[in-house]
Length: 121
Image (tube, rainbow, N blue to C red):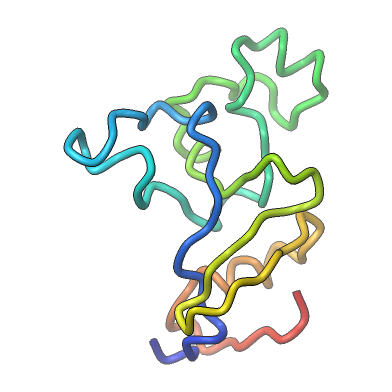
């Protein structure tokens, strides 16, 4: 943890309706566990749609990628909070991160050893 425990995300909110990993602990170590990353922008809701038309109607980013097995999008952190999500950092502190967080900063928080220690998020 070379970036420091107060600069590294450990746990964040996910919406199980937006992913195909819903089998629980014993099936693929999936839903409710660790299938999320900072690779998708925070609160990206594309895979929460039930159809491409719904994704279009809701104005989601890349509505053609609405399928829940599109892991590039479905493994993102997201919540029902319209402005962001709650995260637990490795040091045990809890922070609300806005969905408008700089994407690079968000990426740095998701890495434990990139040599960056973002302060403003």
